[in-house]
Length: 302
Image (cartoon, rainbow, N blue to C red):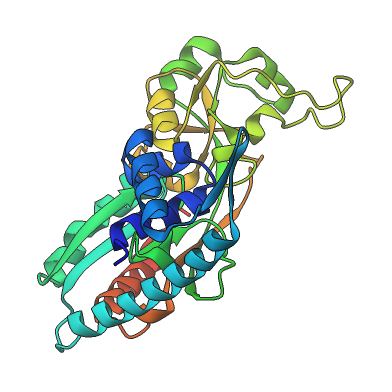
């Protein structure tokens, strides 16, 4: 009999494309994942991956198992949802996935009220700028900063986020306030550490603004401090470390920050509430969706 835990690990590895990224998502060591995949291949009597220096490629047998794993996960999720939602009162455990910024700064401010309204629901909040796989039930629902492309995911638009430049009063008192984009050259800048892994594109527009057509062929400015999540950037700005491009909702929770060059706006992006098709009739998902819609409608900092 195939071990389902090993199949779940296999699916994560297949989606991630490497043991390293799968280890980050699962919270396991690479060696543990490698052992589980090896044991699964031994159970099946067939290799599941071609191992190359640049990553992993599924074998024909791996493709077959991946499709089967997705189907089994969907059916198990549907059965689990039906069993949990058999009562009239919303109940059960709800696993919520979202970005570090939304989860740690905005959502946690409201979850206490949600739990008070629905005492038979418990919540796990998973914050990461790397998306989890809802089809494999790594979470039940997600708040994502782009429209999902998977056909088996239901989506509901929540709100539109705006971004501007922010700094702490202590920094501006010490270094002055820029009045033009060109003056950013004379300031310390805080940026997202790995732009390719950022939750939205162009989050580091502060490094490029005004340089698109200059004689340096658009070479970005240097960041004096980087962090791999916006909450860390927020704390750095609050400590007077420099200027950063931040979503406006972050300033709602930190009103001491000052908007710099307010006439210049950064990227605009839309948040979506997303969940799998098999949870369409879930009461706990429905009440959480409605709760989020209520809160974003009442919030004036987007």
